[in-house]
View (cartoon, one colour):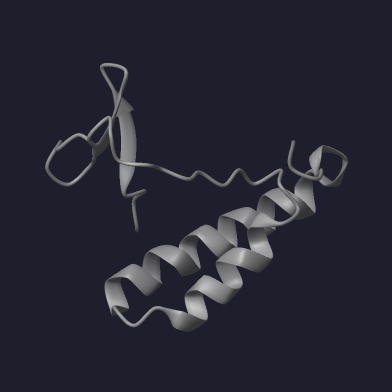
Length: 80
């Protein structure tokens, strides 16, 4: 199973593989599955990526976002 790359730990965003936190001064952009723009962006991101391990994670996210969209059409919306 492909696990998400980051998690929240002690109020910090950390890389799951080694627990290294994302520095506070590094910008982070998060897509939520309810954002109707997110899935098309992930599909295009998948096209331009080259690393096989990274692509596997993107494919998993695409599957998860698609499943969410299909099960929760009433929750889909334009980003705020």
